[in-house]
Image (cartoon, rainbow, N blue to C red; front, top):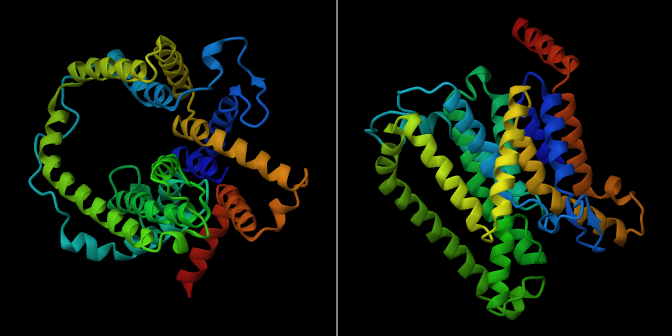
Length: 352
């Protein structure tokens, strides 16, 4: 819920209500399929291909690639999408020195969000971006290539990986889909994460930390090696590039389970996403809702089963209270009353 609200606020800052509506629509669409706890069929309408719900890959391809393809075909342009070349890969030291506060803050946000079971990298990136935008002296530049926005989102996204290992190794609870895949790989090797992990496998946690460190260095080297090569892709004119994107989108959707239904869903979801964008509704909250919906649905119902149907733990547990406070602040920060309060407070501080 917190991730959907943050994403909705950021992708539609002028009309956050539309972003929230899109996010909750995604949560509703995530309930399609077989109930994960009791096995009931929900909103499948007797279609066997819907029993497993909406796959993430067709949703992402349809939601982000398809509308852009339609817009390009409607108003084709011959110019390329990016610069012809780049002369510098490493950021300047002055950029790092000027944004060191953003780096430290975003890293801490990423670790903190990653340590919350079920949060994941997407929420960390959106939350860090939101915090950086509110703390920036030039928030109007965000979304237009502002270095603070790029640094905050990417730093939190990367630092969240280490934070996600905290609940994974101590509780055996994956905080994101990649963490769930890592948990499956650990199980295949006979390692059972949990409170007894340090006693049963004393060297496993240091080995995991070393692996994460070397993986980060490998990603850094690969990024430096491939950056100048991949930038050439943007030199292709959109009228040629977009049909290639459409071809690979179809191949990618079909490759997931070798089902024509996934290709059909990609086209249908793409048309639906295009119509939503034409009406001013952002697509990112919709996709985030579909991705996080199954996890939220299963976890909230498990919590209700453990509490025997009582919602009291949602308002008494420390973690739940912190998240509720953040949700309340996210909603209130988009109101006119809060904006007017910030303006008056800024004028009062400047007058002093």
